[in-house]
Every structure is written in C-alpha cells, then in structure tokens.
Length: 197
Image (cartoon, rainbow, N blue to C red; front, top):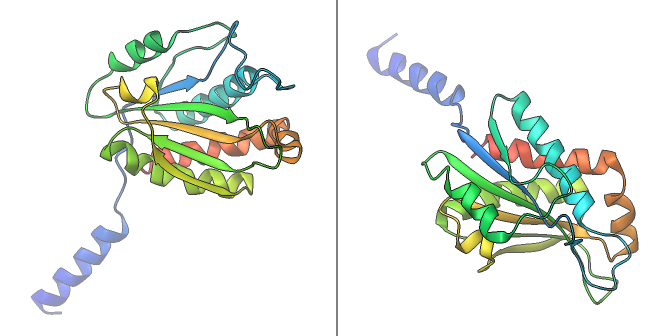
C-alpha cells in the first residue's frame, strides 16, 4: 500500500471517529414559577409545572451523560428574569450554553407547533440542532427558528435559546404535553441535540 493510500485510510478512520465537544456547563431554565403561572390569563393549564418537569428531565438526562447542569429553579419558586441571567452569566466561559424551556399559548385554539428563539450566531447553531429534534420527538409542526430580544436571551452572555415546546391552548397538543412520556421524549431530544453542539 502506497503512502497516499495509507493517508486516505487514516483520514477516513479519523473522520469516522470524530467526536463532538459537548458544553462544559448547561444552564437549564424552567420558565415561570411561583406566582407566575405562565401562559395567557384565560389559560386553563398553568405552564410553570410543565416547564419545571421538562427541565428536570433534561437535567437528569444531561447529567447521565456527564454534563454539568445548573438549574435556574428546581422547585415551584419565582425567579426574576434578571436573576436567571445572573445565574447564567456566572458561567460566561466559552463552553457553556443556556436553554430555556417554555410551553406556548395562543388566542387561536388551532395554533400548534414548535418555536425556537436565539440570541446570537453561536446560539443559532444550537437552535438549529435542537429545533428539528423536538419537532420530530413531539410529532408537531415547525413554526420556525427566530431571533428575539427576550430578556433571558438578550441579557445573556452565553449562547442562549428559548424553546416553546408546543401549545397548551391547543386541545390535542395540550393532551400530549400532559403525558409524562411526551415530556420525557422532548427532554431527551433536547439533550441529544445539546450533546452534538
């Protein structure tokens, strides 16, 4: 085997075994909490419990993979937006990311699907990995990846995304969101994407 053939074999072996560098820290933010129930005023199902449960499942899955996880809240307590970003900005190193979990609401009952928001070019990379996996896990519609100036995104020094994991105001989607298996699939889909970031 000539030198060139050996080089081709070595390159193909290296490419085939390429590993992804996972974030050193993932700040997991369960939206709302305490007196802030989340969602629209008329909404029957409060958002805060579903965000917390999904965030806990995500944290558990990531920790099993050896990732260090920091939760902005781990119980039904109110944490202000500035406190959430203060927690996140404490980990302002190059290998940390921020993921905020939410469930959507809409004036139109027929609205359904997944939306993902980001704050920077680096955050867009993470959003582009997470978004399609959540859609697939939830068998839902793609409502797009968008830049938004939400506080937890624009005041964040980390690559930060906010995922709206379905509509609690849509009867069919709300029924799925209430299923713990569904939230587990969602959490695992997000975790798989983070591990590839």
